[in-house]
Image (cartoon, rainbow, N blue to C red; front, top):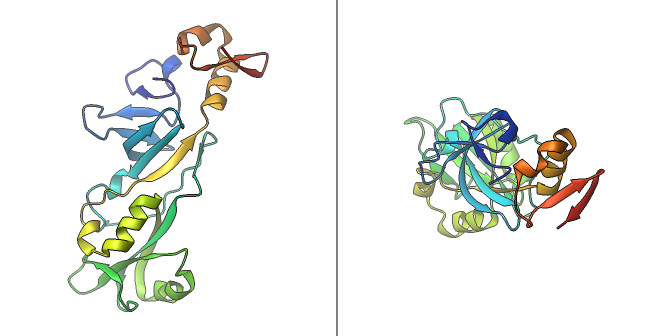
Length: 200
C-alpha cells in the first residue's frame, strides 16, 4: 500500500524511505536514508510506524557503535519517544546502573538521558564510546520497571515515527500528474489538484 513498496517494484511505485525488503520475515526491513530498520508495527490510520535499528536487532553490543539520525522531510519523531544513552566499555559506572556485558574487563550500561543527563554526562569520559537511541514510551516504561540487563540482550525496543502521507502523495501528484490514478485507487486517500489538498 502506497507509500510502502517492495524493493523489486518499478521506480514509479517506489517512495524513498518506504522501500521494504525481507517481506517474508515477521518484521521486514525498511530502508530509510541509507540505513536499515526493522518495521515492527504499522498504523495506517494514524500514519505511524514503530521501527528498530537493524544493527541493534537482537543485540546491544556493537563492534563499532555509531549514532544514526533520520533526516527525512516526510518523517517526524512524536513527542512520546524517549532517549536512552548506551555507554560502552566503561571503567567507572554510576550507582544502580543497568549493566549489560560486552567485554570481560569493562562494563557497559544505559541511562535515561532526559531525566539523568547531568548525572551521566561525567561518565562519558570514562567510557570507550556512547550512542543515543530512541524508544517509544511503552518500551521505556518496561525498561524502567524491569531494570533487567537481559532485556537488552535481545533488543526489541522500537521507536515511533510519523509519516506525512498527504505531503508524500501531493509531491508525487505534482511530479506525475497523469499517473496519480495509478498510484492510489481508493476514495480513502487525498487527491491533489492545482497544489491544493482535497478529499473525495
